[in-house]
Image (cartoon, rainbow, N blue to C red; front, side):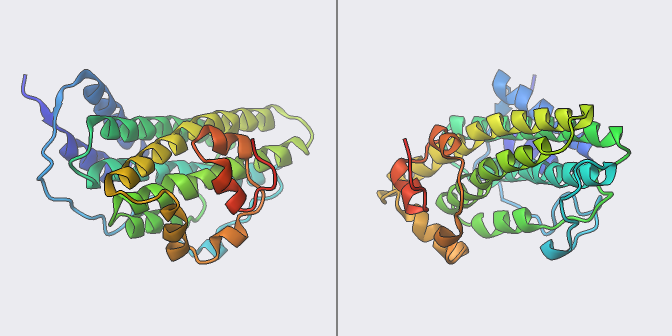
Amino acid sequence: MEKSEFFTLVSEALNQSDPDLKSSLVEQLYSKLAQGSLTFDHDSPVLEQTDPSYAPLVRIVKPSEVPKRKGFDTKEGQGVLLHAVAHIEYSAIDLALDSAYRFRGLPFEYYLDWIEVAHDEVRHFGMLAKLMERIGVRYGDFPVHTSLFDAGKKSGVDLLHRMAVVPRYLEAGGLDANPKIVQKLRSYPKTGMIEEIIDALNIILEEEISHVAKGDRWFKYEARRRGVDESVYFDILESYYPGFVNRSGDMNVSARLKAGFSCGELKRMGVKECG
């Protein structure tokens, strides 16, 4: 049987807009990669996305115009929250696929890591979509912003930058934000839906730790390959997000340590106690 070409399949999944079809393509890609039934043409051209794959499904607005997350004891408030998190997960599918697609000549384990991440993100999106359906909401019912897509494009010029910006900054920020949302949800009277949302967020948090850890692994791999100190992380982020250290705020220290951050890094970002 003739083998399929890896980067072609990744591109097809990346550019697919329909969530169900995208999910199916990622499932097939993950299965074929795990079975060793793919070839790798590292010299094939990298075709840039001009627009995010979700553009046909949603109304895109400025971040300041996205609905505020509040009133989690109402269907509308729960719908806004679930939609916002689902959009993050949909965007994360594409960021993982893009990381696998655009960077060539790397060890097999690199590509397996990012297709595994895409596979997890597909499952996360599906969990959230089912919860949204229960309260009469579909992906695309609320406007979204393109901040994650934009960050992916800007950091896509360089593997070290991509690993620093996307998993080690943006996804790591999710490790900090997730428990705060759960805490807020727990402040409302307990209902079946609120408990199910909390359960979904806890699953996402636990699995996102491994995603950040994969980014940490390949950031450090690339730093070693170039012979640069890992502290270049701070220089890279300062170039994308000036003053980011001063905006770090409260962090999920235990999750970040599990994901590969050092106490030295976290203290540099404002953490008082670590370890």
